[in-house]
Image (cartoon, rainbow, N blue to C red):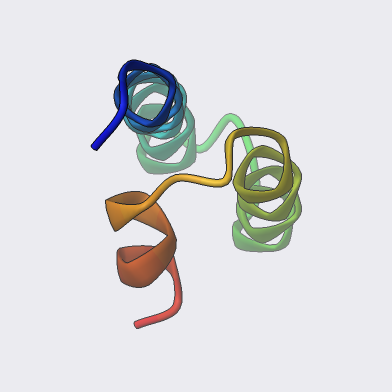
Length: 55
């Protein structure tokens, strides 16, 4: 994994951790969660996060 791939993975995972917390707290809906996830998958193109997002 290159430094850029590592950075993108870390940024994606950190961002989605916050988004999952927002979902759990009822700040956003499930539909909004999926929309946000799609945006950040496209932005960061994570290696591992992309695999887990599709499960």
